[in-house]
Length: 178
Image 1 (cartoon, one colour):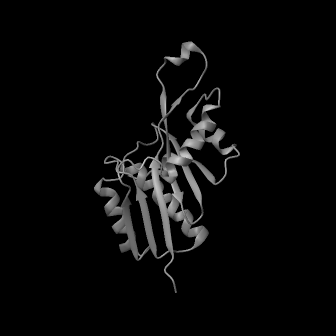
Image 2 (image 1 turned 180 degrees about the vertical axis):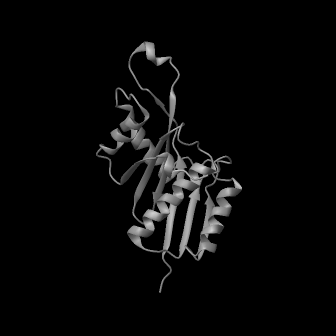
Image 3 (image 1 turned 45 degrees about the horizontal axis):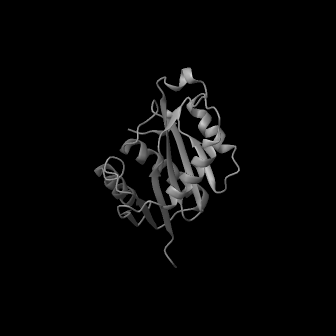
């Protein structure tokens, strides 16, 4: 039997400022950051877009590990168990090179979810990984939106788009583990 491998690529897109309005009065007002964290699943050829504002979570290890864990549970339910997990990330020290992510990958093996986990880093200057290419397409679509009133509107607009191979999740506080 050939080992079943689950291959993921994780990355953050630039912050989406909210509100996005055309009025000059509101243009200079303080904005709330809305984060877009993408996890591309090579097995399904789908990018999972986790969107949340800065009041729910940051872009550090708690958010990354919580959303990765959430997706792994969903993938296990939909596809069954895999023997190997390979996760590709960029070289962001604050998001992916924290020791918590390494310990989480080790925990997955000790828990019996996988026989092996690999955390791989893209070379510096990689510029156009799969997530980056999809984020470019998503950004072009979002740029065409004239107004966005509240952070959750970004997820609603993206969910209603006709872009292919995208799953959109609005992240709730319950999804974030500490």
